[in-house]
Amino acid sequence: MADALLRVAGLAKRFGGIVATDDVALDVPEGELHAVIGPNGAGKTTLIAQLSGQLMADSGRIHFAGVDITRTPAWRRSHLGLARSFQITSLFLDHSVLDNVALAVQAHAGHSFRFWRNARLETGLRQQARAALDEVGLAHRADARASLLSHGEHRLLELAMALAGQPRMLLLDEPMAGLGPDESARMVAMLRRLKQRYTILLVEHDMEAVFALADRISVLVYGRVIATGAPDVIRANNQVREAYLGEDDHV
Image 1 (cartoon, helix red, strand yellow):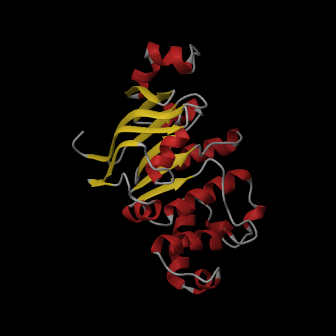
Image 2 (cartoon, rainbow, N blue to C red; image 1 turned 45 degrees about the vertical axis):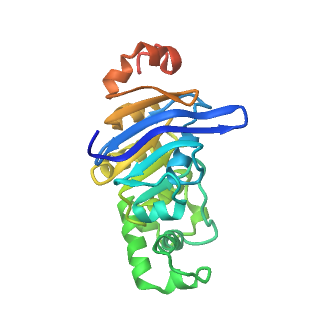
Image 3 (cartoon, rainbow, N blue to C red; image 1 turned 90 degrees about the vertical axis):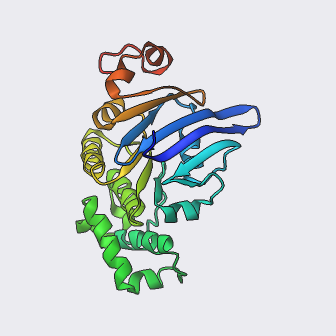
């Protein structure tokens, strides 16, 4: 795919005798929401960690925006426009919602910071942070302490922190994890809006959300991609059904 924003070829990671990712190949063009699904232990989070730079690949290549980033550290990948959210939120719960996002802006900008002092005083940081909060619908909670937010709001706050660096591509790891039906619906609506502005690689267990949002889906089983295609193609793939999705009517 000549216009791929993200291109992965032959990516592999092993932990002793455990194969986490095995010869993974992916092409994600600009503007696509590409979902990666698979059972627990399939290697999805390891793949996200390799793409974001938290884990270095044992073999294979990763290209982003035409640049080989296979050995590029995570902070530099962030500066190139890759932003990751995590399956388990990591927030400064004793500080305000705005403080959390301002620090994310500050960290992405590479500012030296003296704990929270600069992030609280620099107008530019806080304006960018407020814009990110507005984008995820949390502007009205900017001054609230992060510990007072609901779990669903925590997920939105983490998403705002990922958006704070104005990325070209979002790597989202289980953004629906732990959400109830109403919060899940809110997150799906949010991601539907964001896909109009950002290229997204989405790892998610919520199949209803995946099939509602994805332009294409890759299925990862035992670290290998067994199928990639449009949602209808994946839904009808017998190998996918046997390996992961089963015969449920909703799939």
